[in-house]
Length: 367
Image (cartoon, rainbow, N blue to C red; front, side, top):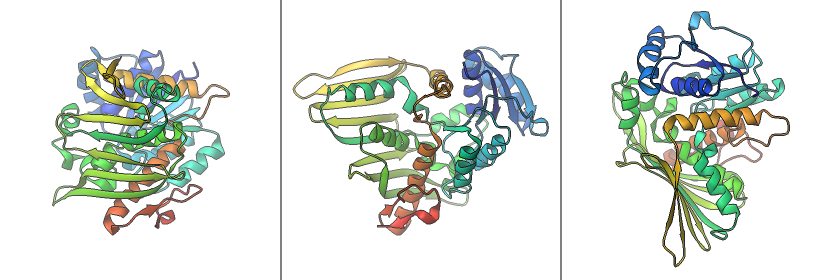
């Protein structure tokens, strides 16, 4: 394997998942968090509750004792405000790769272009943690569509509609959205940031099917704003690619029961990726014209998402490996659409993204 020694910033929920994934694959792990209580909670509560027992081989360090140098992969699993600053800090250590949790940054795109430029200059690959696009169900769906089973792709719709009570159940130390970045869209929270897996999956599938990158955005948002929070509970996007292909993305934090689907309509029928279709995992639902639907279960657990992601990053470091769906540029593309969406709603106008890509707010234009 290319990865053997991993450093993870953040001892919260994501940090635990990443640590378990790395240990499952036999990597050595250290976790850094400026909050000693977070380190204790990881060691005594979260990790044992999820994975059976604490792994004594995992090293923990507070922010004042951050070990530097000798890491193959540095993961950033903190709130979004720290993502780019910590990624820039990690670049100075020159690891083989850096993984940044989603969303990559805040919608102001601060220092995003700097991260891209310095990563290229230092020859360090940066991955963004949109793990659904490298999961088994998405990979199998792409293979099925490319086989021609549903004919020509006509439309593409992705919805991640999920009441975020489940998020707070996994983070019992948080009282609610007001208690973290989740309750503030400008900090990368709300439906537009937290459920941006949907947008990223739409972009990934559009690329895989030859429709290019998103170039225009029309958005309608529904915000919750009071003296405690300021977030979008509903993010509705109509997007158009540079080849003229149109589609729809819906993200919300209110829907119960959860609905996470990617609906690929072809000339011969429909293929649906149903994330968390059952307690045992995802499902692919093939419904050809004039036939009964065929449901193919795709077994997985939540830890599997991160194990697959870690395996993918390792394989992406092989010589001659293709560009990863988790590549930094694709994560930046997603955040530019999120930024454009908020401006589109505020102004009531269609936004145009720059070509070639320019990852700054100043590059956004009105249609």
